[in-house]
Image (cartoon, rainbow, N blue to C red; front, top):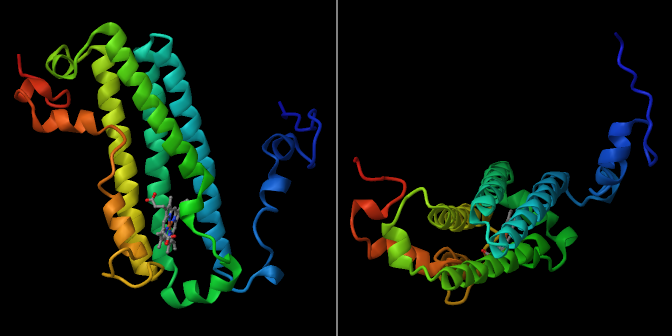
Length: 237
Ligand code: HEM
């Protein structure tokens, strides 16, 4: 039987797909060829704009995870964190596209970018704020339940709070991996300013690689009580 594709939704576009996905607006968000100072602006905008969308999703999942945790349901928070972490993995992969942007072409598009920097990314701001809020909610949950961190580390690997702690570590690591990859991309494209100078953009990026949202969870890794402390390598018996 032939499927009826006649649109039933209201909105712009000839199809329900276009109307629901708002493709006309979305595909109009990139500069047109006649506006561009360099054709690689399309590549540059697509990577950044799609990154903003994934970061929007990641921040929303982190926020919902915090809501569930605050409601006393750490088991419901964990899969949301996994989604957020996958979002960061996807935006890390997108940085690969800059392999095909040469320093000369990047320089040529500079006039179009004004003083803009990814450091002003609203998506990253949201993600950072949501991560800090989650960290506070987790600390509150531990306090309410009277759980201390070493006890959590050495306890049952299937305990929902411990699994959530593992998901938080994974999240933190994904963000750090993005930062490593972003640093390499910036260096490769030559957009890092004078290298090696104290306070240079390159140095700022290197220092940020060490940043962690949940340092106390990482600290537990180096004060481990032994193999039982690692949920990814649970004891054999
Ligand atoms: C050709 C590609 C890119 C280059 C050359 C580049 C370069 C830089 C540089 C030099 C900095 C240091 C601060 C500054 O001087 O502004 C920076 C920071 C930053 N950039 Fe990029 N960037 C690129 C792509 C991206 C993308 C796709 C994003 C995603 C939104 C992004 C997000 C950020 C963020 C969030 C920071 C703040 C540092 C941090 O939190 O780790 N950048 N970038």
